[in-house]
Image 1 (tube, rainbow, N blue to C red):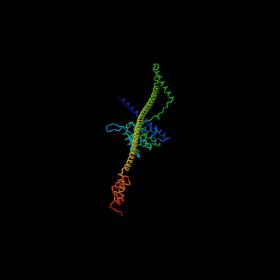
Image 2: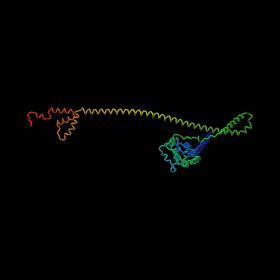
Image 3: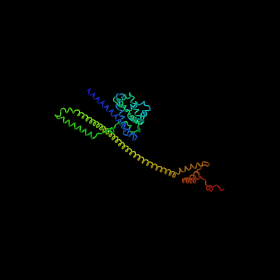
Length: 393
């Protein structure tokens, strides 16, 4: 059991070493491709070389990063921004405070990605990394043993990032690249090189053929003896070469399968998001149609109400006119009021004057004047002359 645990530890340490070496090598390749791309055009968020470099740097800074212990003893995940924020706090004129106060960036991973972009635009990424690595206590507090930032590769990282100061970057800090919900995926395909020529293929086939023939010959009893001992080293070397090539092909196969799996996951996420967006568009279309129908119904109802109000206005105007023309008492009272206001200045309002004023406005007032004459309320000259007991002067 002890030997098994020791072998497992050796295998894990060897795998960690291989992982560190691969990340540093890929980072060097990505820096070179960025420099080559900058000779022809400006590097922005849409450049695949930059996206790959940002993913590689995020993987390096997140390599064997410790989690944060809570009050209950559980370890919650942590982003590399927590380390950069503390380790680079003493850098003069740093962008740490401005990134920490950004409104459109909320998650810790998104702030770390924004810091990478701002540091590249300031041409100070190597300076930030060097200052963070010098704070060994903070680095030791945030990372486990075997991390890249704790090994010899860290000095190489700061040196290779120094070449990025010659590039003019232009980034937008409001794009989709700052979304902290998406993991950093490294695309190794630009750095893979398949240079297997026909000669190597023929040599592999020859080696396999010789191995098969030697195996078939060694199975016969007459070939057992000194020739087998003499060719043992050559056979062992051939087997080792074939095994190495087989392992290399197996690793490439595993990488391609992992890449296909990641692309399938991304495709399924995109398909699900597309379905949600299509359903949302349908719902919005249905709501728009309903609102349009409701507005059309309201407009028709308001038009009907306006027509009814107009007809009621015409009817009320006609009724008022008919009431004025066919209500002699009201007209007489109104005219009596107006005339009385004029007569009250110096004359006494007598029944004869009221009757006279009424005769000017309506036929009913004329009739009232005639009734007054008949009732001898008015004095006429003919009656005075013909009355008995009076002599003409």
